[in-house]
Image 1 (cartoon, one colour):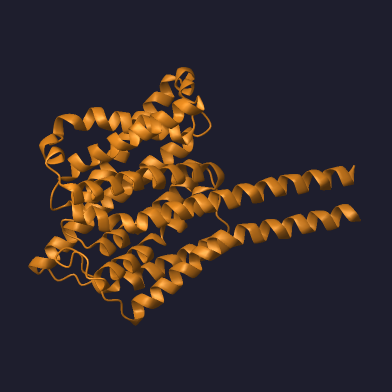
Image 2 (cartoon, helix red, strand yellow):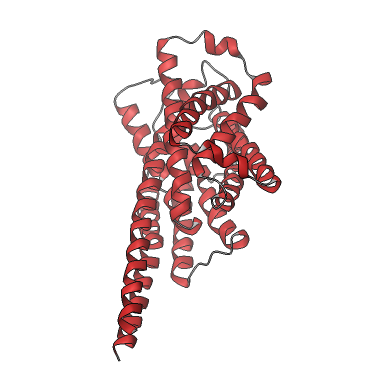
Length: 335
């Protein structure tokens, strides 16, 4: 009997480990995609407004998603949904659209790295939203890592903590306010999506969001801006759209395999990647009138190190404690 229980425990552990690795891989791809996205979005501010760009991104993502779901035979999931699920899907779509539009609009006032950095309240909103609304749990070690993550973000962010209201600073703080609204919208979308994954697949959730967005935003979309785009502008817009499919598809799937308390901190790595990507583009001299690199001092570099270490701790500690618990159970069964 003890052997059976232990064997069963090993199978469960193996499945959990496999799910963890898959979830971590998926959210890593999403974070890498989001790290480069602000650069492309910044480039679009010169030729298309945020609503029209979001509509175009949704249109391309919808075509890809509906073709994929039809091929996989997953569209039938919509038939069995209850009214409550449809209401949740609608709210998820509204919050997702608000996130897309406001993040792009904030780039009129912020550099790409600044925008990603200011968006990093979202991991905290997401993790604690999981605790409050989804009944997830954080142990003391994870809470400590969240505290050091917050400290790291403050150090990373310290060059922008000057509260003087010079003209340029007014624009900066307007951008920050817009970004915080975007972060809250994104968190609301993510929490609703997490609550729906037992009823409908993540890809179908995204498919509904894209379709809903196409209908809602069409009256506000300037189709002339889209028609008049040149080859380079189309290339940038297509990259934004492909990025949407990959990043949100991977993020949605990762939420099936990881708790929000582990997904959220991974997103805190996004501004680090965004700063690196922005610096690389600036060093190469691409779009010098639009893309400028932000200078990082010693405190900001220390903040980056603290953010990375904190994220590693939040990801590694649950597995470490689970391994210790399994070892204790094994020892108890062998007595």
